[in-house]
Length: 114
Length: 111
Image 1 (cartoon, helix red, strand yellow):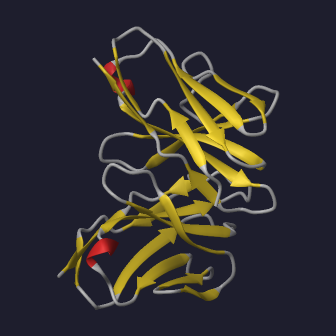
Image 2 (cartoon, each protein chain N blue to C red):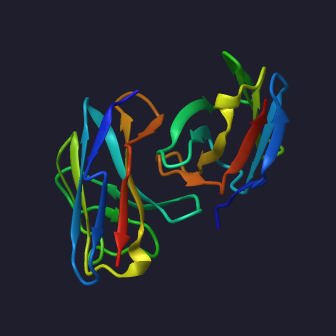
């Protein structure tokens, strides 16, 4: 499995501010994704992080709210912009190792917006 | 709309018994199926994946896939208290590694 780290592990932020979450993978991967898990719920895909180009967003998620970068194969960032309490959630990055289909998740970032 | 359905539970199973977790999916063209275990406060951990009809065994875990019935299950033999967790079924409907998750089944193993 790929070893995936995320920073920060948790944060408490004020309404209207932005937070950037970093995701680092230990090996060459093909795909990287960002998911959200709201309290007591399952995972929802936010976007696919594409290396060197704009991310591909799922329905209900937009670049202005969740800008994503992936400057190289093993690193990606997700920014949660202009936060509101509804953005309080766990944000997870995931990766698919080259040559496989299996997807592994980072430890997550627990975000609380007050 | 591509959906993945799971019984939310909670499912209680005595220690040492077989736990059976079920998942149905709506997209008949789905090719890849995954089971994740998620402990409270932790991120999902991949425990099984299956791509072909039939059974796939890995230790105490067996995944079963029936594409005709659009059904995938996870059996846990000799259940242990450490198996108590939420189990998430995930499907890749389009073969592009974008996963659709079920709502998860909360499993409790009773000592």
